[in-house]
Length: 121
Image (cartoon, rainbow, N blue to C red; front, top):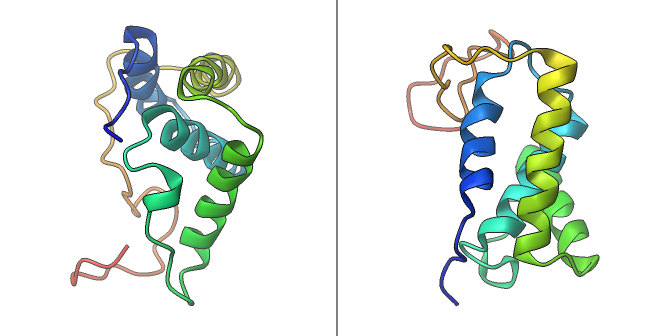
């Protein structure tokens, strides 16, 4: 199955989600991840790799995505819910249109615990 068509609103919300003034909670980030993955279906959850045994973050993300998939949420519904969630987050955390999107997985935002240069996430 190929990736589904992304609506213009979904694409804008994806960009806007990286321009929030403050970092959402972990639960909100998991919901964003799950709705994004379900909304894009690239790859579908059935064909996605399982996280490693010690990858606790990866397991939490996969569980969140699985929950959305198990609810029977279609890709189009997930995109719509994603857009709604980003709009709520923009109100809750503030939004800076001029802010350049931060790279996904930029660990400098959350902690100074490790600065591994070997490509681990």
